[in-house]
Length: 166
Image (cartoon, rainbow, N blue to C red; front, side):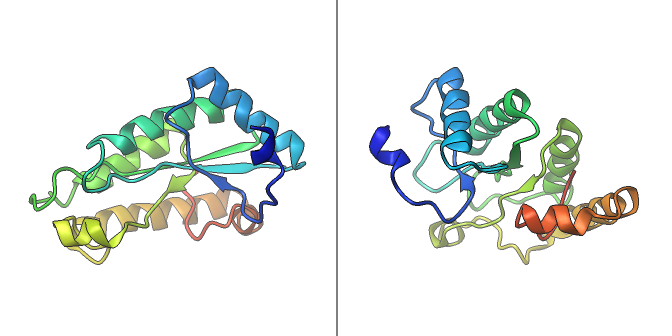
């Protein structure tokens, strides 16, 4: 681990390490905060990918929200959507319902970048109708945040967020 801490970091997002036990993961993130004198770290769940564990996002989400709880307010957690099997019909409410659940659970946003293999395998494109209600909900959540917290745009800039689900 010592060599890892000596690498200069220019980005404050991390992905959970599945290999580390949960309490070691908390300590790891805490050590990074202290070593680099970071105010915060954004934990991004790895989205499901073709050829990998079909529930990777769900497991990452659990780990990230736990770490956020333990190191609050220095950790922001971005959920990964459970995409379902490739080439399956996606109900227009599926991702919208997930957004509501993750938002209520305290997630700060969503990781919305998928590798090209996912699209080639048949996962829906971000322009798909499957995401319309999801994006509408997230846009409303960001507007509500702005009404409740006039300085929300500053918070969002600090977190490198375009849309906040807080």
